[in-house]
Image 1 (cartoon, rainbow, N blue to C red):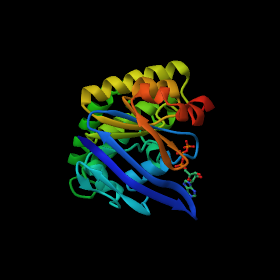
Image 2 (cartoon, protein in one colour):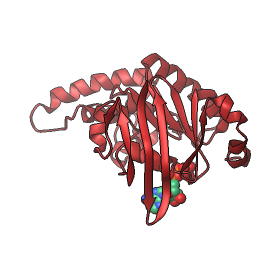
Image 3 (cartoon, protein in one colour):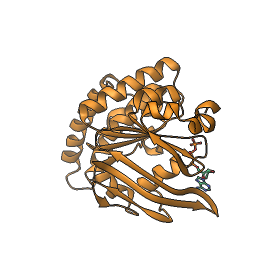
Image 4 (cartoon, rainbow, N blue to C red):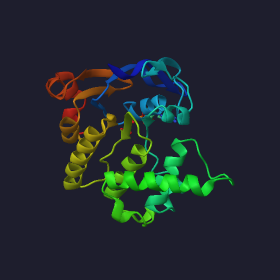
Length: 249
Ligand SMILES: Nc1ncnc2c1ncn2[C@@H]1O[C@H](COP(=O)(O)OP(=O)(O)OP(=O)(O)O)[C@@H](O)[C@H]1O
């Protein structure tokens, strides 16, 4: 069954068509990659799915419910997680505080004058659990801004998992990592999400990692779906090889 569906999505920027009728179906339990050369429209589609951008046309459904145009926070509360780690306010917090604040945010709580301590303690307990899941418990009192990139990416996942999502969206989770770190990150994502039963939709430029991690791949090119299939089908698709895989992107 499809957990997420995008149907015939159009989105333009000042007359430039970034998405020209894209459809995508993410099956529950799958690891689905969205790939394509620079400017193909991947981030724009992510932003439309998560409510950061409104599509000009088309529909997004999640668990069979139409969510097109819903605000991001409402979509997040339905169990569709996106990463927050690069948001400025998080950088000055400790690792534990960043995850705790995210936990409270998912539950629609804030630091009000009344009951803040009890809520925050609950948030901290959940945050500790999330940090253990990603192996960052020893870093919990470090500032987010001091973390090496590999740990920042794990924090990204911890923050997303704190909302107990069904679907996780990761935009280039391996960007900036060394070859060895990328391998480790792929194994980490795969094991953790399988254990948690989380469906994954991700973008990534590292072709080797995509072929290892994904069980379904959609290839975007110039705002359109060029191909869709299993890693093996995509690897053998001549059009894809010409437009993308052979291009070293
Ligand atoms: N806010 C914006 N204003 C104007 N043009 C935009 C905007 N956002 C995206 N675009 C354009 O839309 C096209 C698709 O961009 P998008 O960022 O979705 O591509 P992408 O596939 O994510 O690329 P990359 O792999 O480089 O991140 C690009 O030509 C980009 O310049």
